[in-house]
Image (cartoon, rainbow, N blue to C red; front, side, top):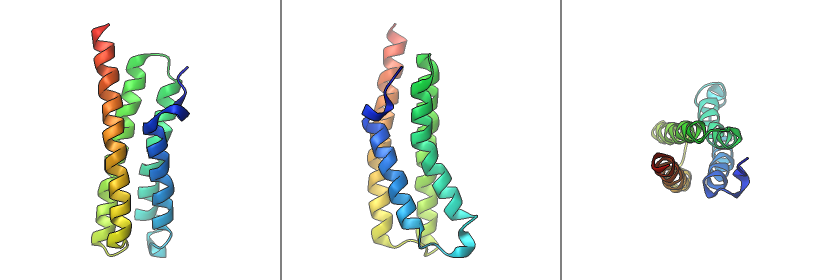
Length: 122
């Protein structure tokens, strides 16, 4: 069994969730069940899929869940960009989130790629 709590990808994804919850607190109330919920769902999906992938027995399933986590991270990035363009998010908050998401994307992609290479060589 893999220990997700030791993965930098998980730690960064968890940081992204906390940051997104913080910045979406100020979104308009009419967006509570719209964009706010959607961004939060996408963000929560990232560490959740890393955890679920770690619990899977096969390497291929693990890699597949890391791919889902990566896609959710990209989704949250787009949604934050939209929120900024709609005026729900300040430039400063957007940049904080964007930089953390980009960092998480790089680490998660590298993990996925290295596992894929490792499983291909076996």
